Length: 71
Image (cartoon, rainbow, N blue to C red; front, side, top):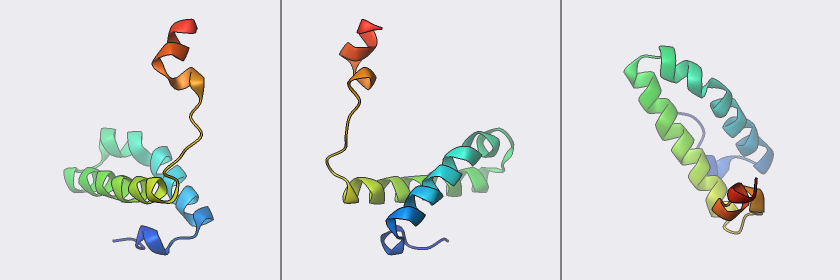
């Protein structure tokens, strides 16, 4: 189901992730169990591929625990 994430271009991978994030709540609230399960597994596939390609990410200090405490 869906193109293997390894075969997606960088642009397509990001587009697919954005689409999944946009549809997540609707799927959670109103989708049948099989749709939610597939949504979850596809999200995991795409996120894993993103992390494989980008093992060192630019971490926003404000997203860290200490950064949150400073707010």
